Image (cartoon, rainbow, N blue to C red; front, side, top):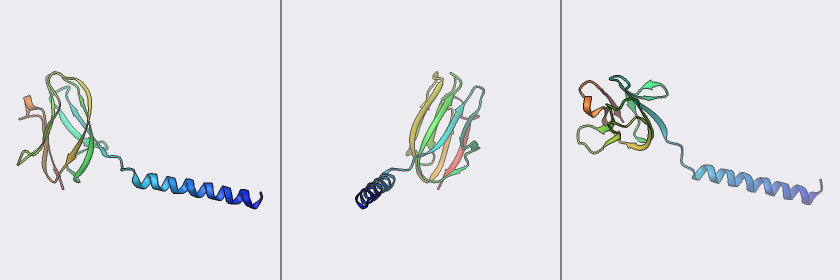
Amino acid sequence: MNRTRSLTLALVLAVGAAAALATSAWSRPAAATLTGTVGPGFTISLTQGGQKVKALKAGTYTLVVTDKAAIHNFVLEEEHGGKFEKAVTSVPFTGTKTVTVKLTAGSWKVYCAPHESVMFQDFRVS
């Protein structure tokens, strides 16, 4: 390979590497995923990586909720102050919905509004 081709190849590789680094530096990390399930019986859960959520770090999450019963809904709420409440699914919806949520420090809860006394899960965000 002659010297001109070697320099050209080195320049092309350097520009490609710089572009790859710049792209990764500017891109946002993917939001962590939480999985919510309500129904088919009188059950509701919020999990991450297959484990029941008891505590999370504050931040932005992708929440994927599967609603398996027309008599239930899935609500996410920040307790003690009511700054945030979102009904992700509604009665009589069944199926899957995906939302992006920003969780802030405090006490949180997921529940089914029609059956809240028996269908809820509390967790902390710090």
